[in-house]
Image (cartoon, rainbow, N blue to C red; front, side, top):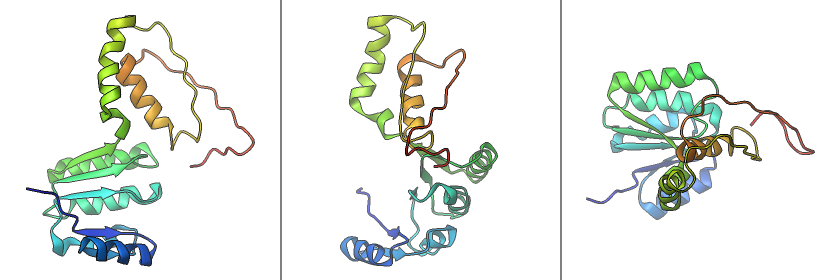
Amino acid sequence: RRTRLLGVVDTDRKIAEECAVKYKCEWSDAVNAFGYTRLTKSRPHIIIVATPPETHAEIVMEAADIPAVKAIVCEKPMALSVEAAEKMVARCQRKGKLLFVNHNRHFDPFHQKWSTMWQTITGPPQAAVFYYSRGLWNTGPHLLDLAFMYFGIPQWVTNELVFGVNEQLNP
């Protein structure tokens, strides 16, 4: 069976409507839990949460309560606090839903191949230094995911926060 798009949610009403027409599906312009639960009559099996980070926890918690939903794919960052992330995981477990955090680079064939070859070629790493830009909320999760994939879970981690001209702490 093929996957079929059942609904789209976007804050831009025009984009939501155009997408709905193109894919012959429902739409909502409410980027919150209501926007997603409004689409429940279509009985989606998978919900992808690609909204602003501050909306993730609410939407995932509500999506977990939709009976037809089997899996929820949440864009990173999963949540804005560890407490919120733990509640999301607990709700999904309690409701029997699969919860994924999207790390698209993790499943890239290039990284899959080289992560296994890397250890064979170099042996276990003694130390690693990484630099990244665009903030912890943006590229940081990809850096950490790939570092763990290539080198394994570290014994300890330290960091130095350096601000440039146009950088800020908040996402």
